[in-house]
Length: 222
Image (cartoon, rainbow, N blue to C red; front, side, top):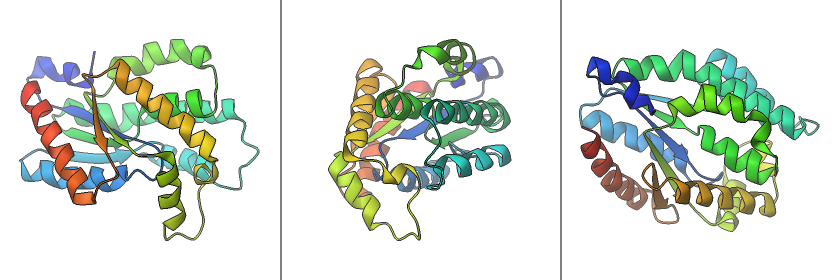
């Protein structure tokens, strides 16, 4: 059951649209451009992110992305992401969707599969019951996956104008290659949910490609 099915009894059109991709793909930029486009179309839109999106989530985000936390073990990292996701779902996403809003979320559970499952090479079987009971019922209606070669993504990360890289920015090329493989596998398994877009083009061209594909999805869901 997707989030849109939660609102069918009330004849509302709330949706959860997530943006995914390896670091440096430009997903956050595209998320806000899509927000502007959707608002122009008359939709009520809420933007949020994972980790983060709530006061508790932002504290978890600080722990996860602090480059000083080199001792954070992969299983602890995984559980922190899950804690953030569940808090975020019930405090932000589900209430917004239930009132007919379109929620645009910068990352969701696909990121955990790609980053912790493929990138960290963790066996996610240990959290399967949590996922099936508490996350799977609220999967996104649409997931926009921005695809980019890991080598180009690392170049973009290195060109960012920021004081300090976060903890994930410091990962190796091999790590991002595994993450990209994870995303490709997820998209292949659920072609009806994923919109895959070449993120190597200009910002405006990528935006136009997302708009074209998303327009068809929104029309089909009305």
